[in-house]
Length: 209
Image 1 (tube, helix red, strand yellow):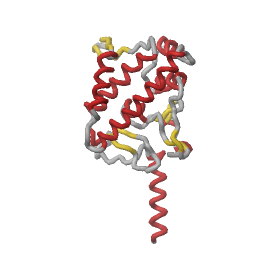
Image 2: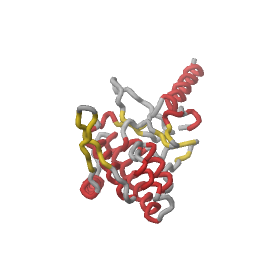
Image 3: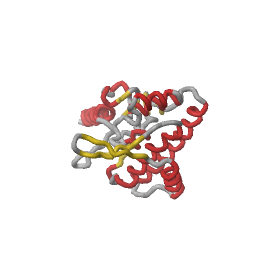
Image 4: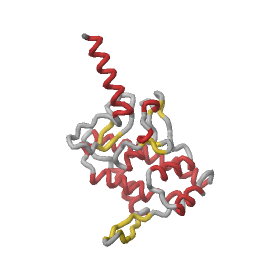
């Protein structure tokens, strides 16, 4: 996957968002760029940017709370734990795509995290209606587990496994939730891999002709 061919609206503040599901966008924070795997979450400052780019952190108050993690021992110590979880999630997603279910150890870890870091919610007025808003206040880096495990649980339990796919390009490791009507999406993005593969296929047909 070459970043030079990507349109800007598929990247937000240096992060790729083509997964159609937050847990998959989190999984895609280690894409192949310029033929090499690139870690997009190397430190707490990068995590801060991803939390804002993903829409998990939006308020000025929460942005200030997360910004305080930059360079802190607690913030920097949390990032490797989150990345290790991401790679276990990758294994779980590959199992789903292969028609299996995540392993017992991963499910046990998920249940532990769901109990320890439950999502909080508020009822709020929206015009004449009441809406349920998830409440996230990142007082410490570990609070990030709340939205991460919540969206992972949603992926595992509410998304049709046959609609979870890896991009068909052999050089791409991006996964996505296919929300198209026909369920025929093949690439992470037409702008990233789709056009390149179509051009390659066309050139092969011309050579054979």
